[in-house]
Amino acid sequence: MFTGIIETKGEVVSIIKDGSNLDISLKSDITNELKIDQSVSHNGVCLTVVKIDNDIYTVTAIKETLEKSNMGLLEVGNQINLERSMRLGDRLDGHIVQGHVDQKAKCTKVVEENGSWVFSFKYKNSDNITVEKGSVCVNGVSLTVVNSGDNDFSVAIIPYTYEHTNFNTFKIDTVVNIEFDIVGKYIGKMAFMDF
Image 1: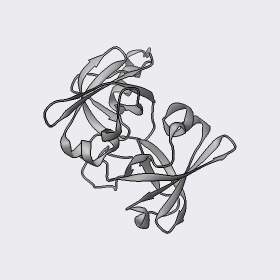
Image 2: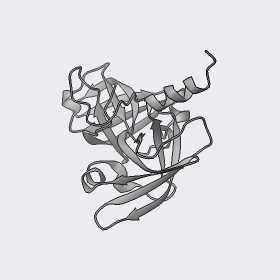
Image 3: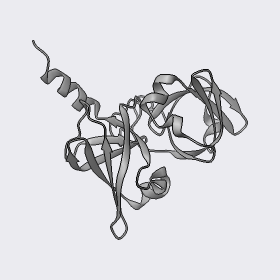
């Protein structure tokens, strides 16, 4: 479980295809604090550390992950948002984020607003929804929805988030990972159940 508050960024240093999987190696300033079998959020995708070599660690993304997320689009040199899992008793500064990406979305608009930014995203038709002032997780970042439409939404980004996450690399058509609010997903499912 994660909060959506990004700790740091990592740089992709190697991508090796292994059957239908990708072994992705990253360099980060938290590598020396990681251990094998630990869960880490990578652009919102919960992946397990499988190897550590000095300041570089490796995770494996399987076919299911590659189909639902932007992990298959990574290239060496890309910056990845990183967050280690919550510790029981920690403050929940963002919202409840599972690290289970629901689907991908494309950036459709970036508006600079004199010190802040508004990013708009569109996703394929699905049962997933956003609501105005609700929570959404974009590339692992816990955000508040400022505009919610059918299969699209916008979020406002403060300078700190822009500088400390990979939002500063987004442009039109950038593909991002979306995890919709877990509470909203449960309520949506319950609304269609017969009791």
